[in-house]
Image 1 (cartoon, rainbow, N blue to C red):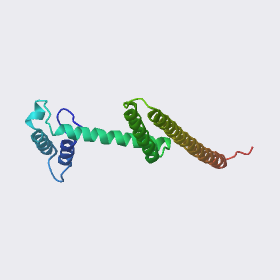
Image 2: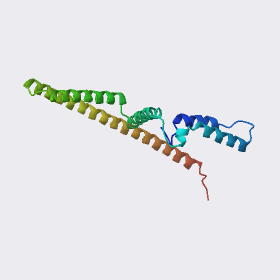
Image 3: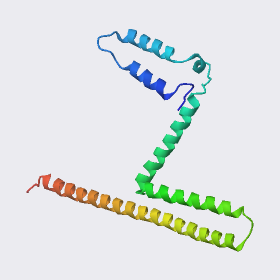
Image 4: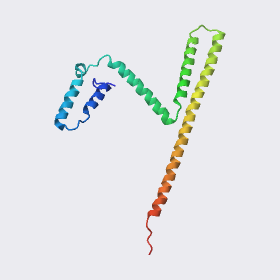
Amino acid sequence: MTVSGLSVNHFQLQYQLLKPESGTDAFASRQDIAAKSASAVTPDAKAGKTTAHAEPETEQQNAFLDQLMEQMLANRIGLDKQKYDEIQQKIAQVEAEKDALAEQPASAERDNKLSALDDKLTQLNKALEGLIEQANRNRERKERSEQAAKDVIAQYRNAAFVKQQPTIFL
């Protein structure tokens, strides 16, 4: 990730430089930190230019962040990410085979293969939908159990609160 010409590595370096040292003057240490931070910035970064080696890092980091976000989303909804990826990969393979067959000249054999690939694609899409439905059922079941646990805790707290209140006899 690049922010005004600085990469994440520069931010990590600056964080390490910002760690307080024991027994130093606060004003002097701030000036030292500012000087070290300024020296960490390259002249290209000061001018707003990015270097060519920063772009592959950015692409790798973006790819990693996308993968991480997909994994977090899959975990949140209870989806088995590995099975999902396998099905998506199989769908892509079948579509590639179908496209390759579509470019060939028309024949009865080609039409039979295309219909078989269409059937396989339909089965894979149904498997994908089933996986998503299963994830939804698992998520709903988990939410219901969490809500039931919260309800039990609330009942316990209410019962404990009622017992703690002093009664006044007149």
